[in-house]
Length: 394
Ligand SMILES: Cc1cc2nc3c(=O)[nH]c(=O)nc-3n(C[C@H](O)[C@H](O)[C@H](O)COP(=O)(O)OP(=O)(O)OC[C@H]3O[C@@H](n4cnc5c(N)ncnc54)[C@H](O)[C@@H]3O)c2cc1C
Image (cartoon, rainbow, N blue to C red; front, top):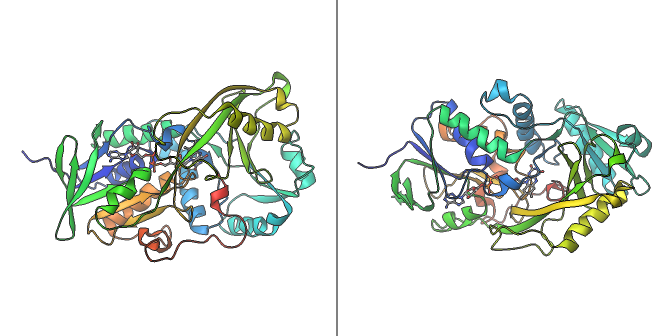
């Protein structure tokens, strides 16, 4: 008997899992989710999972507001599993040339009802007295932000989707989207064909190749992003907030009681890697560089010990913004990819948007036109305005 579904979602990261759950919650019919490796085996499983509402684009702030609500109230919203959300706060540290732009972003956030505020150099010490402030001109503070856990979120969405009847197939690879007369008819997989009038691709950097077969251009650069994990010195005291250090382009995010994850903002410099799915640890020099920045910001932490390091996939588009929505060249084909290293916090909202688009043909959360995949072929990339952009925020 033919293998049929109403909707096939491809990719078991946070985005595919979220979309499958949102669709199932809306009673979208028979949904099959296909993942070639394991749930959260891609970027999602390695994610630092920072949840902040600081985005230069208002549309991304709105998507993240939906996510923050869900991460913080998982039991009431999704109901199965958990998000691992910890409200440790999000502290930004700015150099002189970014303060004006930051103030505009904060005003925009406040207009949306978000508890966010600028801090003077002295006020930063009230929030986190342990940071060195000599080279910091101003800060910004979001008390309700923090971090969650990528693997936990993807697996919880999957458990909740399964509970609603989604057929989750792990270890099956999608080789291509099948079409007939410009309409999607399903997918070709390692285990045979599945017939479905709607296909949603949420396959990270691999989305480019799957779309290229249909003449759709989605330039994604696979980038290897390194994390060092340090154990803070015993005299450090309690945990710190997530810190985005824009002076040295690094971030420091607490993990459990005594560990800190160290990452950096510049996603491209020397890190493009077509074999990014192969598991590799960063070399010691790279880890030491991460520790040096952290120790300069938190004096005394040069004595912190590196416990481990790892790397994960960033799927970077030319404008460092995601692409999502319907694919105009193929009726019934949808996609969301190219999250460029900042997609974890967007995943609940993107799942909602994708389910709106599949079910209703539109969404009222944001204007999705600027995020269309066709923008690259049209030479109309997104710009985040003057000043810093989302590329340089985790
Ligand atoms: C180290 C690191 C730190 C990060 N930190 C943050 C952060 O602090 N905050 C934040 O918001 N974001 C962060 N990100 C980014 C965020 O994790 C990603 O944007 C997000 O996880 C992307 O989710 P996804 O579902 O689109 O992709 P993925 O998690 O990569 O999932 C795609 C899935 O598709 C599967 N797949 C691909 N091709 C096929 C196929 N042909 N057939 C079947 N399955 C297929 C893959 O196996 C994979 O499991 C970080 C990323 C990394 C790597």
